[in-house]
Image (cartoon, rainbow, N blue to C red; front, side, top):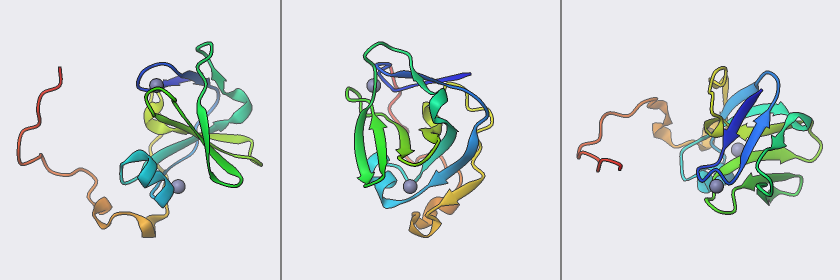
Length: 133
Ligand SMILES: [Zn+2]
Ligand SMILES: [Zn+2]
């Protein structure tokens, strides 16, 4: 059993079982939606997912006729992706509280990825970032 949550904690979920096929994806839908160069997806059984905050369920948005994505309607965190004909629900790896076992084993839509994705960890920024409160 693992838990995950959106940034504002309006939505908290639990998933059961072993993470399936953790992978990065750099398709155009996800880079635009996430604002980042890739999304980390981790699969779990769809029937093992529960939304644990009463009333805290995602807003759904289809990016394909047979695929929809769930977001927090309050803070916008991208939480899940589910295909109509699949028993698996993909959760965003970084919404999970415990990342154990979610290291990506592959990268989908590699050819669409920003060329600098080959940099796994960029150098320190040139100007210091403002310190967060
Ligand atoms: Zn939220
Ligand atoms: Zn994708």
